[in-house]
Length: 414
Image (cartoon, rainbow, N blue to C red; front, side):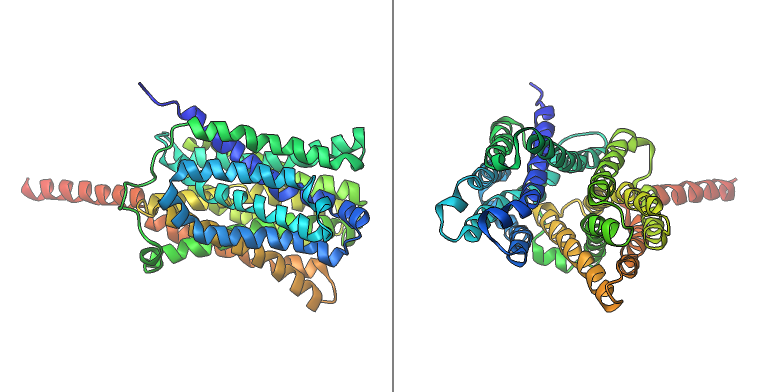
């Protein structure tokens, strides 16, 4: 009886939606936390810091967890703790005298689930016997974008209809998605990414020279994506002088929509497009988008630059994972964990570069955006080098040289 890998796809798709909810729901409530609990904005900033630091820690320890307990148990646990953390936001802060501590405890809990999802969903899809895994990887990662758009639009609609004071109810509603997905991961077929005992260890990977190329690639992919995503709203408001509502819709939300569209398009037509070429072109478009955003004298052109950047970075993260997987097929869970760690480091490094360059330039965000252009440029160079390391390309070249040599031998014999 053939296995239904469609269930596996659906489980992983909803896994990325869960991650999007975990990453984007609490930031929508920052002002509410400030007003309802009297938490300062500087303290509220700890919510995002704790979320991403927790994910980084999970990236590191995930290899041991997956090897010891298996992918299925880890994914079921990831969805459970995500649901508990999200629903906990509705109750735990009110139960503790230190409301910020209550919020941070919930953030840590659902960030653990988010980190496991980030690392393990990609190898689960990679291990499934799909014909074009690059397409499937791109389509999988598009669901993070759609989840981001969904949680922003859905939460905005809920608050408009019922009022922001009922945010606790909405937290419980969003928690139902990971809770439902527990059943999907409990029943779907999950194949090992490599045979038991044959996957490379972290030490072996770190001693592999070409693997460091993919680490740099993932850092640049994460930095190119998260830099614009995090600074788009502030840039639209301060540098382009666009009203915040329209700036957020055309900036961060438009960025997420076009990023998802890029991933979805490659997921549909990826078998007709060379992944390396598409990534090189995307990196070039990203570089141009940063230039357009930084130098735009007309606000609408700056917003177009932000949105075009969303389309350009869409393939970078999933594409980098696919290129790494096909070049180092024995990388196993350790490789996916280290790649996720590198992507998160890039997502931390990129915005920091923009912020520091802006400050050194007299709070000039346009100069800061220019400071981030090095990431897509480096990514293009890394992809070009990785293209030469592609085993399939090398095999085709060898076969081509073999055919030429065979023909030359025939000529000599004749």
